[in-house]
Structures are given as C-alpha cells and as structure tokens.
Length: 253
Image (tube, rainbow, N blue to C red; front, side):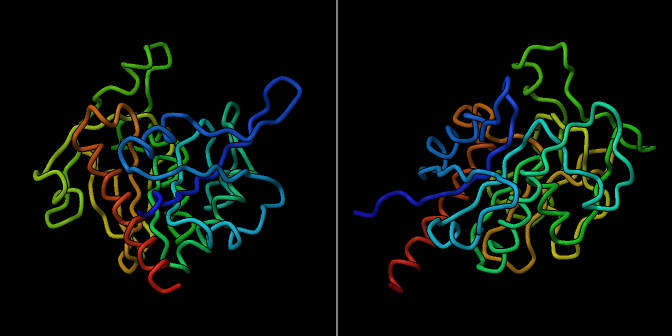
C-alpha cells in the first residue's frame, strides 16, 4: 500500500514578539489532508532561500498559499510600495525559487490567492497592486470589521471558461466564491490560460498551457473545503495529480 503523496508548501516569515516564526495557515494544511488526501510538508522560507531542487525532489506536489503579505512591487514593475502594504521578502524568495524548479520538473502546483499572483509573476505576468484603485474594477477586499465567516463567505460570482478544468469539475459555467485580496492579475502571463473571470473582467483562475497540472485561483477554496463541492473539487483534482506523480516516480525507480 502506497503512503499518501507529500505536498510541500512554503511558509511565511512572521515576526511574533521578538522572534521570527516560519508559519503556514492551518486551513491550508487541513484542506490538503481532508480534501486532497495528501501529507503536507512545511518548507521554511529563509533568506537566502534554501535549495529548492533538494526539497522538490522529495515531494509530489507544491501548494502556494495565500498570505497576509503582498508580493513586493519590484518583482513585477509595480512601482513604489505604500504605507500599510505588508511584505515578506523571505516568502517572495522562497516561492519564486520553488516555482522555477517545480515548473521545470513538471511538478503538480496549486496556487491560491498570493500564490496565484506569485505564479503569474514568475511566468512574466504583472499585477494590479491595488485592484480597487483601477477604473472599472470592483473592490475585492474583505471587510476588516466583519467576522471571519462573513469575510470568507460567498462574495461574488465568477464565469468559468467553457471546456476548462473548473467548468468540467463543477459541471456548470458559473460559481460563487469568496474574495479576500487587494492585489490581482493585470496582464496574465502568456504561459497561462484563463479558467475564470469575475464580472469586472478580473482573471480569477488560470492554468498552465503546457504543464500536466498547474492551476492558480484567486479565491480561497481551502475555506471550509469539505462543505463546498466546488472548492473540494479543486483540492481533490490536485490530490489526484499528486498521486499520479507519485506513481510515476515509484514505477520508474
């Protein structure tokens, strides 16, 4: 009997009191266990980054999580930062290093929120640093005064691209998702194919044109994933891709 596949996820570098901690949201870890049926492996984000190739040779998938921080603007020619814009240079360095190696190895990748933005930037795309300041775009941020149930509750509908993965998994052309982000996709990387759009035109999901399984989503499907069939389908498909990767590696050993 095979053990569950191993999925790596980079941590955030967070100052707690006088000390830095390598942290990952438990909701992502829980979703990997409950919906993808894989074993999570936390990959510490340090400066300089640890050798990504060594890590990824031992895992069967990569999950890029959301985070409180935003990608620093210099990574995508986004101009100057602004007061209150939280950064995590260690996470930036680790995520981009991991992505370079993961994509080269055709490792299954699921990228969520900040992770989707990291994927787009790594492949040459750009971001809106503040979506709510762009003419014609909605405010996709959560209400900071609302309860977490409201913040991560249904926020808006998305149109799923006909024939795309999400439309096939969901069995429908639209879905309702949460919305907890300030940055968003400006120009989508040429290597990515749109999977979903919000009604203001913002790209809400995309997949790689040439890799076996590389998918980015702007919302948070990890939130109460076992109670939402659409969210669950995303993690289940990722888990299946990781199991296929594991079988190929073991069969070729």
